[in-house]
Length: 67
Image (cartoon, rainbow, N blue to C red; front, top):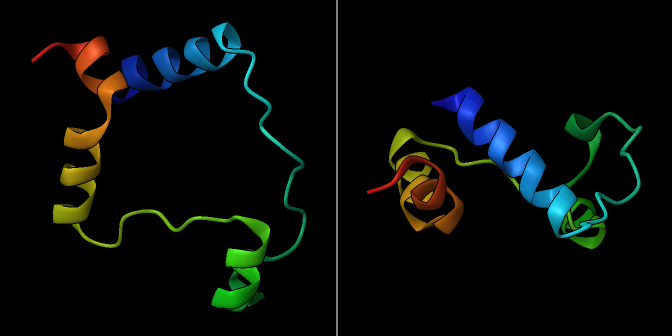
């Protein structure tokens, strides 16, 4: 499932011509939370429950895997 979602996300980005932005070359572990927010860096889900909710809320997951 993870491979299918990664492939689908990549293809969707190509179709929509999304700009991935500039790469972050700094050690992100050394940045403060405020610096991350300023740069637009978002945190990944911190718990399994948050991760499951993020997947449930993402329309690309349903489009790729179905209901």
